[in-house]
Image (cartoon, rainbow, N blue to C red; front, side):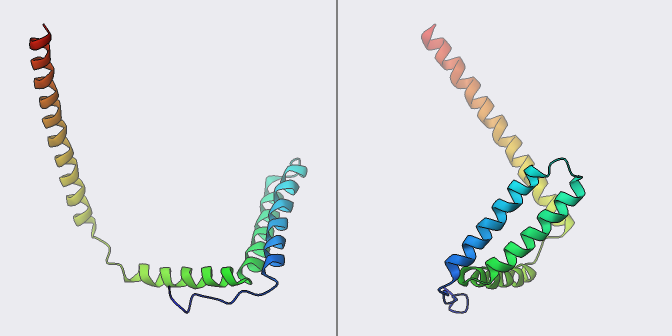
Amino acid sequence: MNPKAEAPDSRFDLVKWLVVVLLVVVGVVGNQYYSAQPILYRVLALLIIAAVAAYVGLQTGKGRAFFVLAKEARAEIRKVVWPTRQETTQTTLIVVAVVLVMALLLWGLDSLLGWLVSLIVG
């Protein structure tokens, strides 16, 4: 494991995670309680609560490790050489052709075996 990604756990991490869980519960219960209010206000409130919960979660050791992992994953995704549209189309057509050929072969084998069994059974 990457030593950079390992963050020391604080003794208050459990309290911070309990605050995160409490914020999520408040968001769910509040959304139900204020169901008569316009959806815009409820969504804005949920987004604010989610942002606060994410901020508190990122202050924990596991939250910091997750943030480092996400940054490294983003850097790795930028290194990927994505196929061109032509390469994607050609690969898709090859896969479709192979699937059709295999389907025909399996259909033919199934028909042949079915015919042979019907001859034997009568």
